[in-house]
Image (cartoon, rainbow, N blue to C red):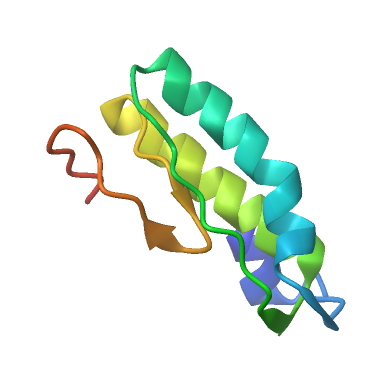
Length: 93
């Protein structure tokens, strides 16, 4: 997805929207994955508004979560801020 964005093949559709519009859809899925891995996702709702492409934001968050989960059996996060894991996890390269 990101190479297509970088090359201009995908054109972002920017909009102003409450970040909760995206997080409210993806947090339940992330929480389910975290529970399956023996982790707990703690989510703090936000009233913040952002200017972004809501679909790209959701896809990027999901992709980041999936990559981290594949590498180290889940490190749940929301809003781009990592939630502290119950055990040390390094999701770096």
